[in-house]
Length: 458
Image (cartoon, rainbow, N blue to C red):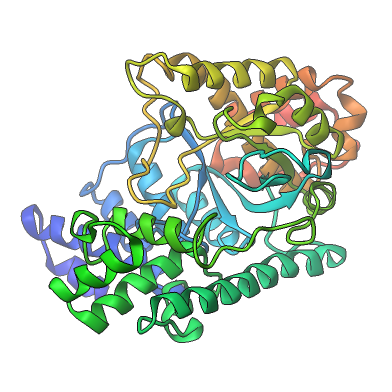
């Protein structure tokens, strides 16, 4: 049916409508429909109805998909398509506690000629900082943490239970939280399977899914008039009419802050048993072929004010990269303390030869598709972010194709310093074209760095 439509519709407004419909289908929970929609869009590219630009220099290696929570509902395929349309240089998916996006994203990037990679984000316990807040507000010793550049969604047998435990623990934590919030928001009460899991395609819900589910259940219970406003005003302790009812950004954020985060009715303070230790998580990431990444918030917490000590701990457990979210760390035209903190942490990371990973997340309403690196504040940082993106991309491909990744024995053998290793992987990532990735599959562990570069350039 879809192909018949494409053949029948000509140019102009009809083609525009068709393209919009196909792009909407990229977010379908049906994987087959997503695949068909991308194929149809690529047909439109072939006939000249859609022009794709040459890749530029902007990057985004931290985008959540609908396999955890994307505020715009983007599937891995949708993110890849929009990134290619926007001319991004390198992109990456990062979902909470799962690698579900990896295979689909990799295939979409292959079809689109896009440099891409995938990873996951979770929370970890850092015993050395048990009394200090790191990057999870109000939670001493707890840190958001990432692994990037995974070669496959199928981790080694020895690591499968760890990966399963991340998702299982998150699900139980959500269920317990929901029960506490249900009591407070009654008669607006959720059923986890019916109201929450239906909002995500693979059963990996987050707090943000629950916030959306509560907003929709309240609308179904009270309608969209004064009764809805009265309910939320009473439960949230604020004038709900100003929050964008029935499910606007401010409402969803307020539901989360008032019921699920610290001080909220459903909140329970985590302790050292609530999350895996950073050491164990990094061991899993490395064994699965990924790159462990310490994440940085904004430099204002007690833990992040001791950033050198914090990075000593992270690097001693295997971290080789640092993630930053630039958009939350500056206001265009204002050289405030957060901007200074951003520049400081980037300088420290570069001095330590940590790979810089950056992105916008897109798991909260209002977050950008890509950072504006044309601003005076971010323009000087772009070369470092682009370098980091090329390194992660090169690692991802080399680890998948021939096991010669950034964190393995081959790299340890051939590069005596992190600086030299970074330079090599940056060159591979900048040189290699997505259509040529399979050529690296012929390399063996006896290959020299020169052999790898030659294969990447061929």
